[in-house]
Amino acid sequence: MSDTAPAQSPTAPRPARARAEIDLDALRGNVRALRAKAPTAAFMAVVKADGYGHGALPCARAAVDAGATWIGTATPQEALALRAAGLPADVRIMCWLWTPGDPWREAVEAGLDISVSDVWALREVVAAARAADRPARVQLKADTGLGRNGCQPADWPELVARAVRAERDGLLRVTGLWSHFACADEPGHPSITAQLTLFRELVAHAEQQGVRPEVRHIANSPATLTLPETHFDLVRPGIAMYGVSPSPDLGSAADLGLRPVMTLAASLALVKHVPGGHGVSYGHHYTTPGETTLGLVPLGYADGVPRHASGAGPVLVGGKWRTAAGRIAMDQFVVDLGGDEPAPGAEAVLFGPGDRGEPTAQDWARAAGTIAYEIVTRIGARVPRVYVGETP
Ligand SMILES: *Cc1c(COP(=O)(O)O)cnc(C)c1O
Picture 1 (cartoon, rainbow, N blue to C red):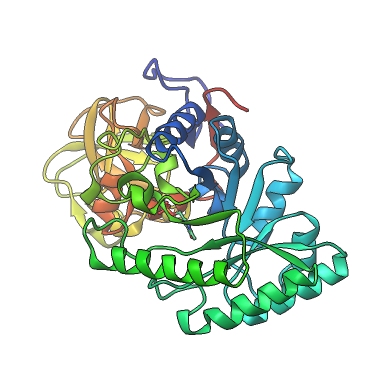
Picture 2: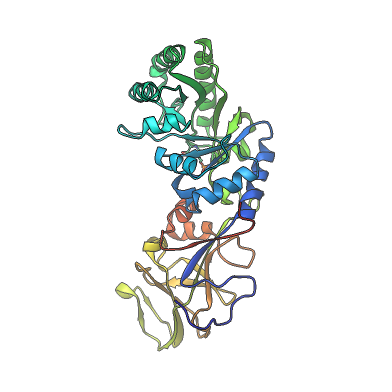
């Protein structure tokens, strides 16, 4: 892939084309920091979407090291893959995004906690439990105001009644009652207390009907960080565990006691002198203002570098912030190095924790008009993940 290695910053292992370095010690530290904010609640590490792009299995293992006793995913396929990979058997795995035709029976046999938002799903679970000849673990999800997944309050009594009946028949165990916030990242938003009040009512109704859940839960990252009254029996942080602030309005990662886990870096593929007036990349949206040097960064939108950050995305090269000059293409983009002449192979850091002076995922989110969640989760499969810190 590469020939001789040009000078590198002493702290950074050399990337080939590019790499996403995943600092598992940082992830452990973030789990501990979040647990300290919710000391009486169990911790569910949310590792959906391949651990927000960081690698689901190594992140799940590191989170368990740091005290997580639950793992959360969106799809049953993600959850089954983790169960098959051999996480400790006492670590519970829950998944919440089910579609007809999904592997219900495998999920029951694997002992997954299955989220149910509707009667059709309860029917599937019950059929799977009969086929597997063992009770399913079911967590009933209420829509307390997010308006996305979850059972509408008007339909809750029927869902609860049917679940209670199936529990009495030995076909399932209602292990949890849960919901999800719409605006937990907007401190003081009136929907927060409204959702919380409704959640308490729906939980109370289910308990009056005889449900005895192991866990009641509603807190995502921002709620874990800032709303102790929402912690109940379990918290479900995702983004904060990866060291990214859920919202700039809540403060930076450092303000929240978190450390970004992913560093995205590449090796410059070309450094060249060009005259002034030279158009750069598709559409010539950048023209060199004078004689200069250009550096070619071998990462593009197919790797998850957002095309919307063309002309704006920041990169640290040789201790200086440079900006994506012109369009970000599928596999590559260009930075104007202003006459500097780093060697080919010199390190270009797109984002990281920020303490080497590099930009953060939040800086890229701002440049692309999106949220940092989208920046880290979309880093493509072509970028190798390299794990640093103690690997569990
Ligand atoms: C993604 C997700 C979470 C974690 O959300 P963050 O904002 O990343 O903390 C928690 N619960 C559910 C249901 C989710 O889908």
